[in-house]
Amino acid sequence: MSEPTRSTEVFDSRYAHRQCKRIVLGAIERADVDEVALEEFARTFLTPFGNILTKEKGRSRWTAHGEHIRFMARLLGSLAEFKALCDPLHPQTVGYDHFTWALGILQAECKLGLEEEAQAGESKQRFLYCPV
Image 1: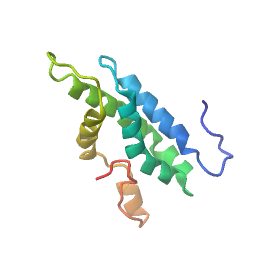
Image 2: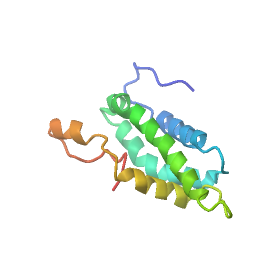
Image 3: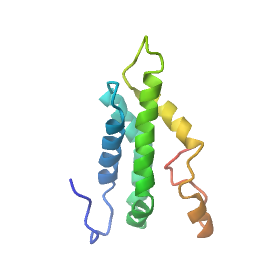
Image 4: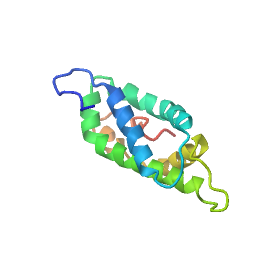
C-alpha cells in the first residue's frame, strides 16, 4: 500500500502502524515470531503513537520523525530477536516479553521530540514514541 497522498488533511495512522510492524518483522531473521504477541504489542505501543498522528500536526510529525520511528522499529525487532535467542540451547519464539524488553532498552536512549517541542514552548512529552 502506498503512502497517503499529501492532499489528505488527516494522516491515516494505520499506514505508519503497518509499516512499523513490517519493519519489526523484517528485522527478525533467525527466530520465529509469535504474530499474536506482535499484534498485541503493536496495539499497546503504536496505538498512542497513532493517536498523535491523527491529530492536526500528524502528517508533519510523521514527516519529521517517520525515519527515526522506522529505524527504532528495526532496532526493536533486532533486540527482541537477540533476547529470544540469548540462550542458544533454549532459543525461543519472539514474543510479547521480548518486545517489551527491547522497548525498555530503547526508551533510555529515545530523544525524539524533546528538543523540538521544548523550543516550540510545548510539553516535553516524547509524543509517546518512547513511553516512560
